[in-house]
View 1 (cartoon, rainbow, N blue to C red):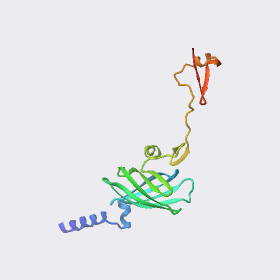
View 2 (cartoon, rainbow, N blue to C red):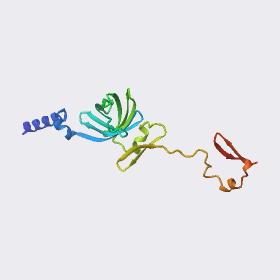
View 3 (tube, rainbow, N blue to C red):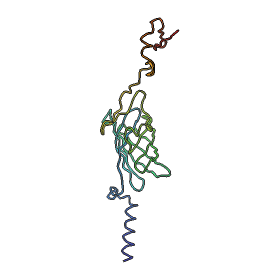
Length: 187
């Protein structure tokens, strides 16, 4: 009986350490990837295996023919690192840090430009870790994630706490304009 138990435990440990793709699904997890790569939005998936190895596949949202895929290794203590090869013949090196076993963020470099990315996070949760292009915002509606024009508040607006009657009663001679912004002065 003890011998059968020892054989079973040895076989189970062998499965855990196996690099055999047939067993990868038993001890792996797949999650979403959101990446800003050379100011473009890429979406995809990463699959991490029990042994710390994994794969990543991403696709440009603005040019669906542009894809990147690669491999990585990771550990809780050291974080992760890997490489990507893209369909436009560029390659990238990436490094990342785990937030949990299934969530994290990272950066990358290539001749195409810099990259920031998250895995296992929603678009909203990804915002602190992504370097968005100037004047762009990330929006998620349902499962769709898009990079959209960022609408900034108009800079010359009166503060909400200003009484409207002060503006209505001001004469035109009290209005001054500087650098495109107007303001009222009282005497």
